[in-house]
Length: 451
Image (cartoon, rainbow, N blue to C red; front, side, top):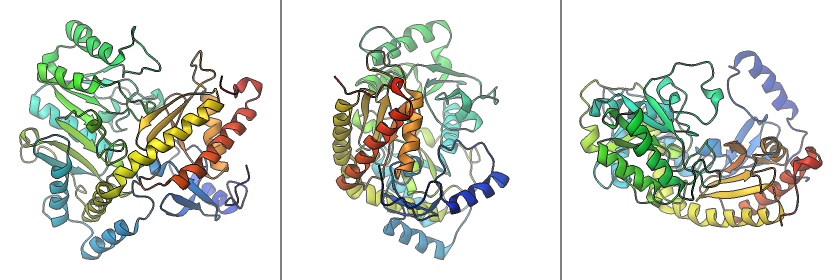
């Protein structure tokens, strides 16, 4: 398709110049997919350094929850920055306390909570793991295959969405046992009840053969699995985990780094099933792009930490706290409802697309956390990895920023203020990009009218 907003061959000359400079001085480890070099953004739109306009349906990996440079967030940042930029966590300031109070008001625990402040998701996970070990005195953990929790050594020991994230770094933190995340589209266990099968596997296999339940400090799980494929668990699964943890005195940790702060049409994804964790981690969309992370725990758990047990130099930064407070006000005001409403509309449009293209195996998600899994054909459900990669690249050339997840899933995570018009515009780019990507793969690419 010809997008009038794309003015140059991508990447353009200014972008190529900056990419060349980057190669000489920036670490090559970043998993970059295509050469988008950003100049500025507003709402769900982003422009590159050559003046090309894009729709941003990646939102900085679900970080820019209120869109790029929301005026109210920018104003909050400016006001905070004019007062002071930093005071270490050895001291106190109003915005940090107010943010902790605000989290206490909205947290899904159904009882009072306390917050520990960090700068990122992986730091939040590290803090949650330390808290669980400290409080329970137990050394072991259970995580899930396909999970992503970060890249520092503790969180990396749970991350298993791609082996490339662990390759070259073994051994990581010991004591972590992985179990399958329930996936009805790609079941690993016999029977239709994949969630119940996973629960039985933990209880009847792990706990009777290799993992003493009395040694397990916590189970760490994403209420909706992100990097693993935007997998929505079967109803009853999270409640089953809650019951299992209660029976054995195990803490339940929900990683809401990607799914929290309105992303799924609820403030927190676990609220779709009315299940409360003992500990929750937050980051990404919490401050509309500024670096902040939180460990949120029931007061009965967090209050057991003693002075000096854990700390953080930059956690609770006043500018980041100001951005988070403005973000929470916007999300809880209108954007969480918009995410639910527009998410339903967007999924409906994608399912219409699936009626025309057999390579779309499944559309899934909640709110504006949506995955579209591509397959070679629906009968075999074989992942169409190459097609997924080509679609992501073609979408960039057509003016749409996307990312993938899982084996062959295109993920859609636009800002929560996105409107129908922008979804409709994106749908034109998605279908054109899918058609072009399949054509690049030749006749074997499998782009056929759905039966």
